[in-house]
Image (tube, rainbow, N blue to C red; front, top):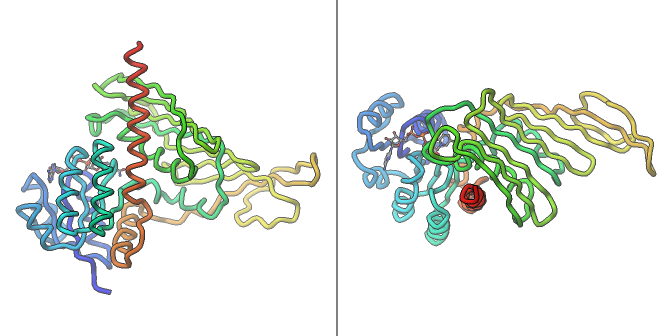
Length: 330
Ligand code: NAD
C-alpha cells in the first residue's frame, strides 16, 4: 500500500515528537510541517528532512491526513479547515476547548467522511494494553494522576490538562453513562484549578473516584479497578499491571505469578491468584499514530474516536462546573 501523505500543524513540545514519529513510521510519508513560528517549523522540517510550509492552506493541499498539535484553543478552527479540505485528522487532546466546538467537529467530520482520532495517548500505555484480554467490569475505580508543578499547561484547569486522560480511560472501561458528578478543586498556585477530585457515578452502579493534581511533591499515575472476584492495579508511570483474582480450583491462569491462598467458604473452593501480565515494549505516541495511519488507509474506526474525545470533554466540563459551584458557595 502507498504511504499516507501526512503533515503536522504545530511543532512545539508535542508536535515535534509527532513529526519525529511520523518520519519513522514506514506506512506514513511526512510531507511537511507548519507552525505559527516559522523558525521552529524550519528547524523541525530540517531535522526530519521534510518541508516547512508557509501556510496551513498550502500544507492541507499537499496531504491526505494531518496531525494537529497546536494549543487547544486553536484546535477547532484548524480542524474545521482540515475537514473542509477533506483531510483526515489526528487531533491532540483535549479535542477542543468547548464541548460545542467538539460537537460541531464530530458532526462535520462525519458529514464529510473524514476520519478523526483524538490523542488520548494513555489508551496506548503498555500497562493498560496488557490487561485488554481480561474481562473488565469495574464497579469501583480509584485513579490518581499527580504531577509536580510545571508552568506548561497551567493556562487551563488540571481537569482539562491531566484528569481528562483518566476520564477518557474510565469511560472506555465502564461503558455506561455518567449519572451524577460530585467534585471539588482548588486553584492553589495558578489562576486555574490545580488540584481536583471528582466522584463519577455511572448508570450501571459503578463509581469512579478521580484525583488529579499538578502541585504534588511526588509523581503518580495509577488506576485501580475493583470488580466481582478481581482487583486490578495499573501503574502508568512504571508501565506495570497487577491482578489479584479469585479463580475456581483447576481453572487455568495465564500469567500466574503467585498463588496467594485458597477460599473454602461458599459452595466451591476458589484460589486467590496474583498475576503480573507481560508488558510489551510500546512507544504509545508512535503506536497511536501508526493506528491512525492504519485507520485512514483501511477505512477503519480509530481506537479513540472524535465522539470519545467529545464525551471525555463533556465530563471534564461537568466536573469543572461542579467545582465552580462549590467555589461560589465558598
Ligand atoms: P506547545 O506550546 O509546546 O506547542 C504548540 C505549538 O503550536 C507552538 O510551536 C506554537 O508556535 C504553535 N502554534 C500556536 N498557534 C498556532 C496556529 N494557529 N497554527 C499553527 N501553529 C500554532 O504546546 P504543547 O505542549 O505541544 O501542546 C500542544 C497540544 O498538545 C495541546 O492541545 C495540548 O493539550 C496537547 N498535549 C497533549 C499531551 C498528551 O499527553 N497527549 C501532552 C502535552 C500536550
